Length: 401
Image 1 (cartoon, one colour):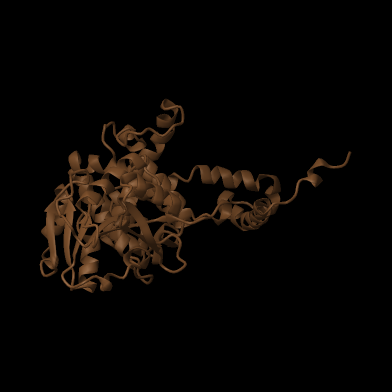
Image 2: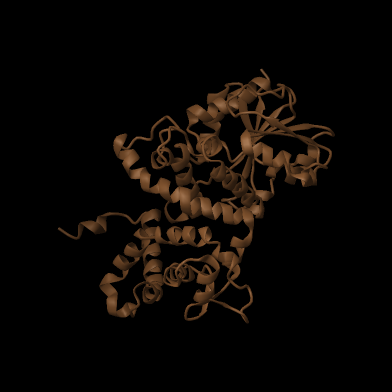
């Protein structure tokens, strides 16, 4: 008998995997000196193992970031390469030990966060400078602190549930890590005001890039004085952005607690056509017959059973002839293996950690809408060109019976 492997046809996916492996080996040949401090050619048999060892310890990066952000190190590092900052200066500014700071910065500079221009001397680079933006600092802080804790609790949670995802959003990795019966954002708003403040501020980070700031739906086609309700709108970042572009519209931002209070108290927003309303996601929709109901970055945080309830409340308030729901969220592209998108994959797991949620593809969104109310239908998915990881707008109307 001949080689049995010869009888197995090379599929597209296996061919792609072989190509990926060859590409990875080429990368590793260059990367291993940085990973293990040795000539890769001397460690031919270890290069893949070394890569796996480092990847499986990738948690050291958010661990280092969380320490650096807590000490406000980005605010003490020079942006001028002519006047870099020594580790001793950082120690004096933060009160932390120079040895500790050196070890944290060693991790980050190898990940292209800050630049070490001389031994133990640092300056900002293009990546680390972004940490000076308050909303980005808040998001990275949340991710490297709260989400890191939640990630460590995922395996114990799944073991307890026979590797099934619990239906209860309050029985998630975050709730296990923080010993609470609440999901991530319920905990922030009901229990921890400081984390709530950081979470609210972090949401603005998603308006700092066109991936999340430019919505492909034609809001300019809505009639004058059309009412747009921003459901779960937090501090109003989406409505503020839209109101500045489309001043013929009127906006109602709905949320609870510190989130809505922070937006209502912002004096810069006072000139915009925005009303602020205390309103929870699971309450009957208070604004009847609005022209559009926006739900942005909310539904991926919940399993279908819960997410459908949020949509269902809105459906009951819609004018069948004129109202629409606009879900602004990720629509996972049809991709597999190496073609899948790391950012989308990561946000899917973040949704799992925070409340047993998930990212959805077009089919899953359609099924969710029908689960909420059989009269609803997805009429169009508006995409941002070919940028698959950017927000899409899922337009939903009431079917005319």
